[in-house]
Image: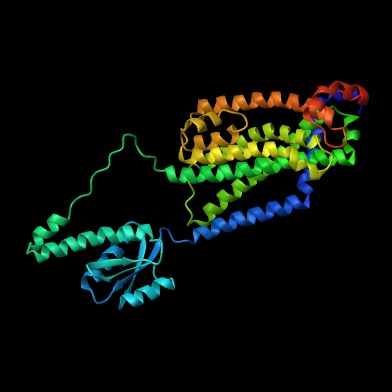
Length: 413
């Protein structure tokens, strides 16, 4: 293939390179094994969660010699059932027995007679949900007992204690899917972080492999550096999209198959958002990873050139985690429009309903435009550095691009 022919068939060259990258990577045993293990873990987690009982489960000990404490225990159990919390009641004969059961983990808390009335015993840190139930029930039970001792008639006693809780009125209607959307957004952020870093690393290592084996010299004798770089990004990116789509499809299918696991209604839309923003984020970061790979000739030196990129992705990841609890925070809003952080910060804002479709389109447009410019800059650096041995600096590569092109006869964009 001549250089002229390649110029006329630039798209064909990109397709050939991307096909080569896709086929070689998907045939790699390491990729097949890691994907299989990931899918097995994913399916295992979904199936295991389908067998877990909804709500928390506690064991509460009550002193058998006290009628008041036994009554409190029974009411706690009933109140827990009403709130989806299972509280099992165990009878204990004394405080010493309650302490023994707490230490060996048989019970989570116990109600025993104290010097001035019933006391809640716990091993160390109190289980807040259980203690809260006991406190509410005990307050009512002790008040009932005190009023009865004062001679209050039973009908007046129940009327006095049976007070309705204060009404709660929201300024904005609550979102019934808020918790499930937050969980979906968290999973999506984790997947994006892992996939962006993992496949970006593949781009960098692929560049180093070609450079160290001098395969790149043969490739650049037939096609332009920009075509080689674009084909590599497209091929590995398509493989990443395939893997993400496969994981999302299997997760949805298994979740529906087990039946006991309720999958959020917006999961399909969230999965689509994750896939779209992976494509946008990968296109941006893969150019940086390719440059990082072109600056070194050994895999051992790759970590040094990749560190700044890794820190940017890590910082974006932490910002996106903050978006799960505060999607409207100024830093999160700003990050959702900046190309390095938008692929991680914008999806949770969209899933949680904080960002509008127009804002998402604007953010995507900024990221895509930045990626186009980044590809041009990366191609220039890549073309000059890819044929150099040893580790080279960005400033040196940028200044010597034309000299390298003339010496090698390689045409750059």
